[in-house]
Image (cartoon, rainbow, N blue to C red; front, side, top):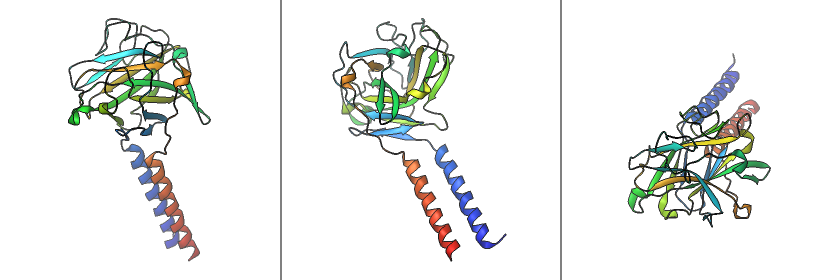
Length: 254
């Protein structure tokens, strides 16, 4: 094999190895500045202060409340509850797929979920990590025994231990909403008319106070599009590919 061909092979091997390492590295979406956003496994996460959020505008479907560093749980009509879910049927209940709003941005449809967090206002205690989101489609609304909640259709940690950083001080107080999650509608296929959302908080920045609550909005007039930005890994990979192509062209020409 000639020197030129060895260089070409080495360049492509290096690009493949680097691409694999980028894909395996955890993605952290930092939502600690107003209007910030990021993408993980095809879903968009958007720091937001949606208003209004009173009765008739949002419908809470799971509330997590504990004094422990880790807070976790999922929505269901089943009892007894498995983790840190609020026992009241007003705050922890089943959620039909038909009740999750579909929002279109560009040419892509998403299902929208709203998250409201409650933490301390001062210092690092205002920060909270959202470490796991798993969404399932189930055949009934009273399933228990996580993770046996039907068909898993979205996993924040698919491929890496990804997480999202939230800042309570951006929108203090309960009921205001802190994050909008947009999950591609194309994933919501297969059997099951009920949506289960399991989430886990506090692994990277501990839960310190209050509760975490997931809800859906009911008024389309209140929907706001997220700020869509390319994922950093994709930008870097494209840039590296361009550099390699440029080097190859230079070698081949010379």
